[in-house]
Image 1 (spheres, helix red, strand yellow):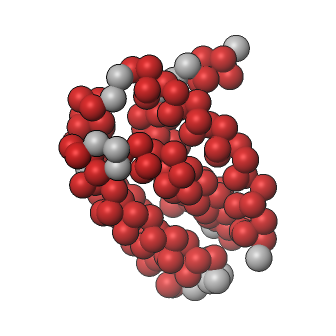
Image 2 (cartoon, rainbow, N blue to C red):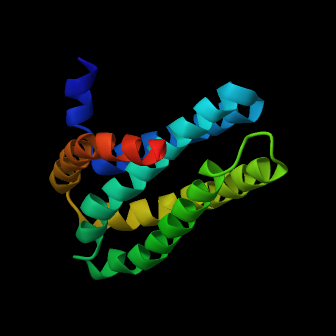
Amino acid sequence: MAKTKAKSTDILSLIAAEHHQVEKLFAEAEKAKGAKLVEQFNQIYIELILHARTEELVLYPALREYEETEQYVEKAEEEHEEVSVILEEIKALKPTQAEFQEKMSELKEILENHVEEESEIFNAVRECMSDRELTGLGQEFQETKAKLVSNVEAALAM
């Protein structure tokens, strides 16, 4: 039942739900230690890389089609690159190292800023695209993300 409902969800709702999920993962990571912290980071890594790559493949090309929304793509791509670099830096650290927590805090701050800007972007997108387009993009988003999961999980293991 939940899968059917998710299939009819527009891309903006899916993205907002993923942002909320990552916020919850960060809250859990802040309380975790040792192996549990590594597990939480691994989940954050997978979620963020999947989210960014899927946005880049599905949402950004759609945003480039409209003058009102294409302006947001370059900044978002820069933020994704910044997040990717920090994720790789954290992945190379041990949770007992002070830099691990510093980088996690830096990552969380970048993501909080990204989410704060969300409403402005989403409003612009809703003005340009129909509900039908947003729902179609939502389905494409979910399908694309599902295809990327194994590659992202493999990248984490490296």
